[in-house]
Amino acid sequence: MDEKRPKRRKAKDNPYTLAKIEDQHFLSFRDGQGVLREITIDKELFELMDRFGLEDLSYLNAVDRHYEQSEQTEIPLNLRAIDKPESVEDAVIRKLEYERLYQAISQLSDTQRRRLILYYFKGLTYKQIAKREGCAFQAVAKSVTAAEIRLKNILK
Image (cartoon, one colour):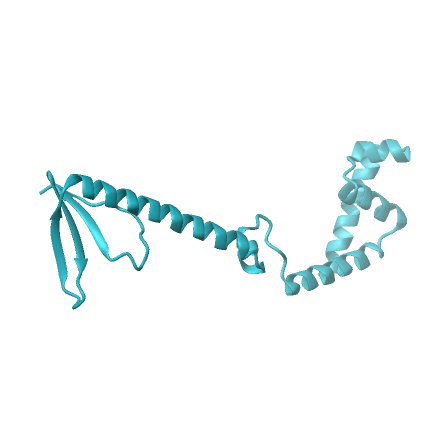
């Protein structure tokens, strides 16, 4: 049996279902007593009701889009966000960690602190820092490495 039913969403108050079996077209619905009825209809009526179903679906989609656009509250906007907003707890923890890191950096020597900041926070290379300070590349590398080791010990 070759049964074809349009597979689509429909309004909850839509009382009928269409089906096509071979060359026959059917309309099924529940009557006032809740009994399922199925009647044979001609092709033109089937196509008309099918088109109505498509228009009904188009209307449902438009209503959904309207609700989606008119209800721009915090929850749906956060669900769509690429960069999710940081929670208050995470922001507080991050701030405390940064304060702890800045306090540890302040305990470094002036040279180590300056070179570490230029390398990690300003994005300069060892070569650029060496040129800027008029010293050897190896001196900058040793300074930054020593600063990293000292920070690790302070932050333990």
